[in-house]
Length: 175
Image (cartoon, rainbow, N blue to C red):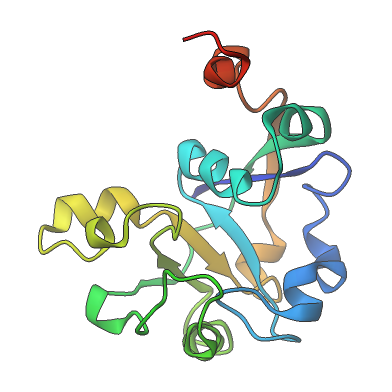
């Protein structure tokens, strides 16, 4: 399986150091503090979108971050259906129930992780009654780094810059 991870150029390939990440120490949307979790995307566009949630501007994004392309063995992933998503899953701050839901799958020996929609996209699309619409939005892949398949992940490539100069031309007044 190919997965994408946008992150700091010094750390994007340090998957084994997950205990040093903020999501492990403090918890993330889909994991409680102390629950092993790594956040990936199933497509490069979603990884770019997710990175944008954490950075003040595109210059910073391209200066210190890279796009990591990883290959893993086949993963045992569960795709959460809209009716399995906790109420308010898309809100910030996120409700504790999202962490409880994520922990359940991350700690279940039957799974390597789970797939959920991006919170950066309109939640009505993620909850659409049309499968094809939902499938295009379910791109966040949250995995347990202690699982064997994740430990076998290989970094295939690192790319920088992540964003083209044209992607943010409107910020410079160039419409």
